[in-house]
Image (tube, rainbow over all chains, first blue to last red; front, side):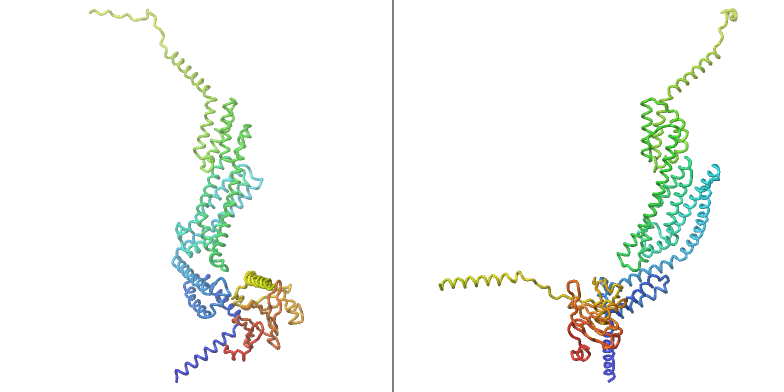
Length: 427
Length: 166
């Protein structure tokens, strides 16, 4: 009897439930499902602690059980995603959030320590930035003397180098906990790295260094010996960025993919990668402007060394055309026997070999071997022009020395009466 | 003469037989078992130009004639919502809040033509919704009303009970 009553109650409940289900709007079911799904997804993505993450599985299961009998309707309404796809997506996100929360907890202490370093570095960078602005303003002022300007240029150069060093230290602090190979990191680790890079504003700082150097080059009258340092700094920076570029792009793409919550799967990843790549390309463009500005200033100043002294050489604007220009000048001078004293003595020996050599010997410019080869070419011209004179003078000096020596060391001839009488010996 | 008549009859019989064989090959054909049904109705807002646009199924149309028919004012639906559902047989069912009817529209080249106008409420619907319930389209209005419709008929509670569908 009790059993029969239970069956009757169950049948009535089922009929009522069925009746209620039939009275529902499919549109409302779809909208309610969507709202709950989105709420869970947002909570998963923003979960940071183990406690927050622990609440998620229960909510996914509730969603599944509540809407499983609407599975077909939901699959149709959210085509091409199916009901099962959407639940699988939530579960994947949950697994990722769980891993991320664990990572945050295990690395918590280290991260806090490194964040302390980051704060210090940040403060120092801000100080340098203020100082740099003041220096640039002073440099632009016409009231400073040449000596003062030199002092300012040196100071500004040191400031830029210190800024560069600090940003490098900051980058090292960020990458330290994640090891060298970014590709082997899990999605959660890449996201954590991307978040740190984002927080430290690394990409903008890198672009900022390049930008500051562009401003520096535009507002400074440089001397030949400055270029050695500047060219070295540029290529060092460029190499560092080349090594860092892919790592930063991968980490930021992973970070962006997570934040692009509205798009799903592949599309989000592609969009995030494109966005990070665009950011990296902006840095590339700023560095390219820096290079172009530096090279333009460098080759124009170097060309002025020749033109200011009335020596006409073929135009040059890069290492290759410079080397060709020097060789061509030497060949022409050899052929027509022109007077090359200004070229050799005043320009090559006094200016280029003394003040420009450091920059020209940079491997990204002429390189040591090519500079030595050019130097040899010029010195041959020097030898051919002056060799016989030197030989002549050396010969003369030797002759004078020999004659002098002969005269001074010559023994006067003795007269016969002065000769001592030799004693006869009796044998 | 009789012989000639026989030949004419024979020729005519051959021609008819040939035509009978050839004609079906030239006629058009149909693809059966088409299901036009949308899984869920679309709730569409009427814009300033009196048109609605459904993004997923790429359909848009002007609702001014519908507003004129239902409210005797072609501007009555501006800024309001209508509910649209396509049945499995390809008819568009249109209704909305304050509507007394559900309109069954048949798609033609460049237009939707009224096929049937189901009177569903004496005082107008308050919170209507259309559900796909093959082979019917269901209309509910909060908890007050439940109807199953085809393009030509409405089945009410008693019909449903009779059909054993409740």
